[in-house]
Amino acid sequence: MIQEFTNTDDILKFAINREQESIDLYSGLAGQAKNPEMKKVFASFADEERGHKKRLENIQVSGQFKFNESQIRDIKVGDYLIDVEPHAGMTYQEALIIAMKKEKAAFKLYSNLAAKVEDPLLKSIFESLAQEESKHKLRFELEYDEVVLKDN
Figure 1 (cartoon, rainbow, N blue to C red):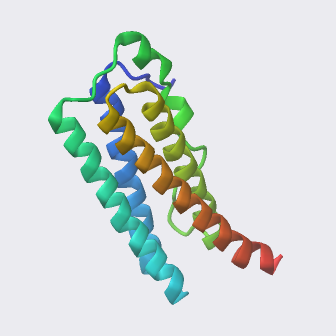
Figure 2: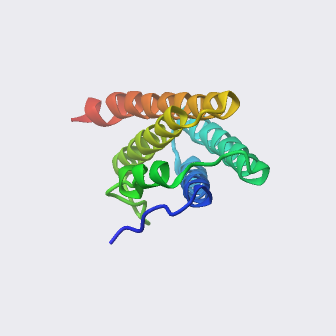
């Protein structure tokens, strides 16, 4: 059974952990990539995810992110989990699929948080994070089309 969020700190911890997972995934893919351009893309995305993690940690430390109990219940952990996890020996195609799903889940989380917060600064931060995740997903979709679908 999937545990639900019980407070705003749970939401931030979840988001911070997802960013760390993305950092680890993209760093690993950068180390394995044969294409120099994709090596740079993965390394760049890992750096951007580090920035996202830092922004979320700053929000957590500031204590300015607060939801009431009904808002917290409305945000379901399961909505932001992916059905496939990275594993040793995965193919490039599997890695791209996982990356696309992670970015889509992150986009949904940050979009939903932006829609629920009233503080204009927090709304702007979450909207910015959602946009960046959307751009990452698009880049992975393009790579998938160019490499995986081209070969099929």
